[in-house]
Length: 342
Image (cartoon, rainbow, N blue to C red; front, side, top):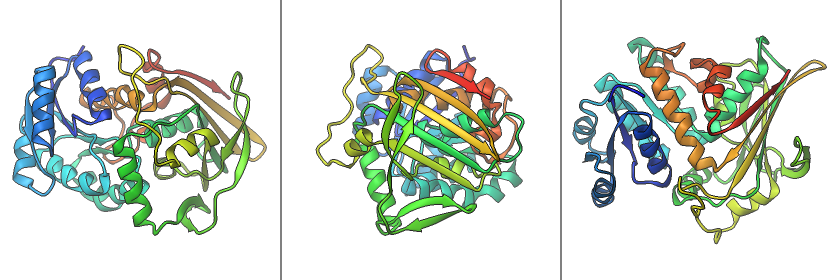
């Protein structure tokens, strides 16, 4: 348990934000509720008893008031193309760590591009994409690498049995598609490239009991930003099971529905990471339930480690660079099962 440190959660009333608030409270932190919708904040305060401070991203003074006295801020409010920059600026003014759960590729690229130098010079900690997509894949890839300093390829295959997107996921996806002009993104040859063609459908041999499944190849997620930010791997590919890809593409797929007392949905995931160097191959496999719910222990564990000095870098840094990846993953054993196969 922590010693009652206050952690602000921007977008606390959102689907993922609520999981984060609950996880912070369970870990002994004092959640400070903030975000753009005063009525939703008021309702969440009535429900939880935690203090709320409304703030809009276009009002720097309000953001400063919202973060006053906080030890760190977690941004759970998308689209992050709109919220990340202003909340990072407010965190820098307050002198506190900033973490977010952004899955938007372009927003994460912007964070590295726009804030790396300032954060490093200030000795500040900014951790983007500290979530299921981006941070988790980076931790698994880093752990699979072991003592390798470079590799030829990294492949991250997402075996989701379904994907019922939140309103925030749909909104963020629409912003990303607009920013890239409807094109898709691929990380190859050591850089991000845009493609006009459709991604291929392939077969991926997931570990048992999932087994071989049809996947959308080059279904690019935030891992193509986080992994290459600190690992020398020129080819980083991500894959998604066809069923989940169809769910996220369909306009009428319902939002997640809780099936247990933790508020988790029935969605299960298996993440299979393979890194290759020459003829050698290393693997990390993770299993769990509900990609939105598991984001909460990921980002709260990260906050805990930053605030207790168990981090290895400053500036804009991804999860695999700032934390001891195998140790971090072991700390999540209550929520996920991870197996490393060197």
